[in-house]
Structure formats: C-alpha cells, structure tokens
Length: 274
Image 1 (tube, helix red, strand yellow):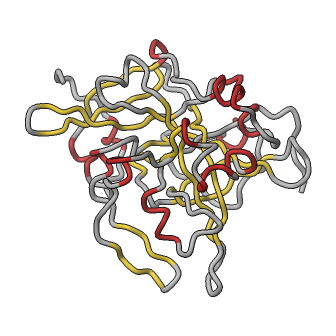
Image 2 (cartoon, rainbow, N blue to C red):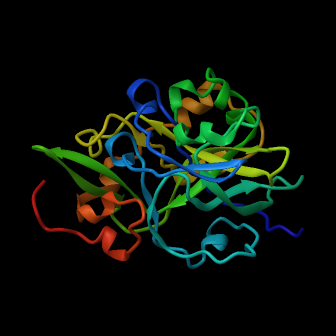
C-alpha cells in the first residue's frame, strides 16, 4: 500500500466514565445475530458527550493524508453510540501511513466475552487511561483520530433539557482523541470499535457538563496518532481542555434528542436564550 508522508495527524475518541456515567446507557437491545447485539440508544443526551457531527467530509482523507477509502463518506449531523463513523489509524509498518476505517462507536476490548461491553464504553476518562483494563493497552498501542465538526450537550432548563451545539467558531474540522480495539467472535467478522477520550471541561462547556471530549490541538494530532508509548507527562500535555475562545455554543432543535434524527437542521441555530 502506498502511503503519503509528512502526515498531519488526526484523532478523536470517547470513553465511558465512572459512577453514574456508566449507568446512563441502558435501554432495550435489538439482537442482530448471535454475535452482534447493539443498543437502541435512548438517553445518550442525559450524560457525557453522547452525540457529535461530521458536517464537512470533502477532502477528509487529504486533511489527514490518509489513503482514500473504498467506501463513501456522507455528512453526519447526529452521530449516536453504536453507529459507524470514519476513524483515522496508522497502518502497516510505515509510521507515516494513515488509513481511514469505519468503526463502531463504543469500545469493545479484544478480551471481552461479548460485544455488549461496548454499550457502556463510548467515552474514556483521561484520568483512567493507564489504570482501567479496557484502556491500559489501547492508550499505548491503539490510539486513533476521530474527525468531527461539533458535538452536542444538554443544558438543564427548568423541567426540561435544552440541546446545545458546540463547534469551532470558524466552522473548521477538528479531531477527538480516540482509542480503538478489534474484537473477534468465533462465528462472526472482526468488529472494530472506538471510544472518545474525555477531560475536564473548559469555561464554555462547564455550565453544560462536568466533562468534555478531548479536542486535539493541531500540534498534538501527530503526537497522539504516532505509534509508541506515551508517558504520563505526555498524556498530561496532550489531553487538556480545548481553548474556549476558539469555540462557541448555541441552542438547537429538540429534534436532535432522537438518535435516528439525521438532518442539517440538527445544527441550525435557534435564536433563543438558554
């Protein structure tokens, strides 16, 4: 496989936190086959970063200097857990070789008994990456970039939750820091999954949630995707809140509460106060 050099990295992943955060992703499950069970995500808006967008897809492979994928990439305006999205990983022995792969959101470690573990592993807390078994190996060997243009959080407004969209002020693509793994069942194809790393919120996100996804600064994309171990000091430098002055947030339609709602209208600004 021919690969381009002088790569500018890419990445984005989420991880499931502790305590209440791991209990939110309940709901009924719909069996696809004996080796593949995925959830009907109902309440991902009530905890953590559970939805995001990739509204800009033109030139996506070129942005990360990855091989052009064999599959078509369409804009996505309300990505929910258990859905497949394009993720950037290193491939082959060439350290500058990048590949765009479709992965399911919700990390299933290679050692898991079944893939249902991914239902509660959409996010990975930055302070647990070297301690939790699901992340310990992956943070050193399976780091990825998750392209995105924004994410949703919900603000408590009286008796209801108000959906808010957070994105860069210039509308540019960015990447989340992610972890990935490959899970294999005896009678099914290999399943590649990922999680998004989260950290403390910046001043913009703090009124909405006590965590936010790690948005990698341009200089840290390459550090994150590059193969090889990262020290605690490295992680401390890379996994930091994104500068709030480069982001903005605004209210959007409550239609985004439905995981199957997919429309550009999902990110249309509603000019009402929170």
